[in-house]
Structures are given as structure tokens and as C-alpha cells.
Image (cartoon, rainbow, N blue to C red; front, side, top):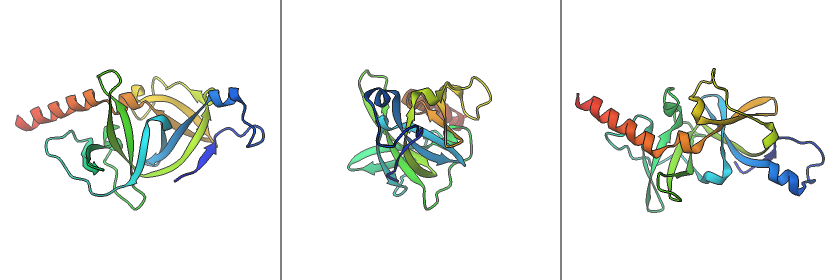
Length: 183
């Protein structure tokens, strides 16, 4: 789980210039439903094994429940469900990635867990290798995608943390679910 891999290996592995360091960003890659996704390493707090999840009634379907993380209550999202797919089955390699999500209040952040099938590696991806999100044809909402990179012949979808884990939008989903249950 702790591997750092260069996505573009042009030149010797130990040769890094100041300019190259500026042009590369690090991403945590993970598997979800057979596809590879990634999040900027700057928003990742930690990775834990899937365990001790408490379900909370009346939550949106994409929220699996909450965990106790060193005394703090942290909501845990099922990304597959958020993308409109069936919930992620829990297997031996299932992890919860703890992500720091920006809130509506400037400078404030909230921790949120994200259920993933398995964590792959931390990749350094040159910004020149990142293409903009497609406007059509994606299996998830285009505003959830920050970009797409090609790494070792495979596409990696770079997720937009602020959109995918938007606390405001998830809150609205919870209100709609509560209204449907009451009707």
C-alpha cells in the first residue's frame, strides 16, 4: 500500500529537476468496481481497513454509516453508490480512505471516509499527461472528474474531491430521501 511510482519514466529514476517537481502531482490510486480512480494525495489523511462501521438511519443511500476515528465521528461514503452503481461489496482488500473535504465555510474542512475495493499506489503524474474530463461518454457525472491520465497503458480517472464529496449536495440527497420515506 505504500508504493510511490513515477507515471512517466523518461530519463533516470533519480533525476528530478525543480521544474519537473512543479509539473508533477501525486495521486492515490484505488480500484472501484474494476476501474482505477485517484484522488490528490494532498486531501488524503489516512487509509484504514474496513471495520466497525455504524449505520445511521435516514442517511442518503451513498452514506454507509459512520466510524469512530480517534474520538471523532467520521461519515463513510460508498463511492460506487454515489456514482449510481451497486454498493461496493466488502472483501478482504476493502479499505476506507479518510479524505479532508472542503466545506461551505471558507478555510474549513470535514473528514469523510470513502469505501474503495483496494488501494493501489501513489503515483506522480506529470500535469502534461492529464487530459480534461470528457463532456460525454463517462460512466460518472462529468463534474466529478478533474481529469484523466494514461498510466502504463491504462486510464486513471482523477476525481474532483470538492464535487464528489460535496457535503451540501449529500445533505440535499438526505433531505430528498427523508421526504420520499415520509410520503
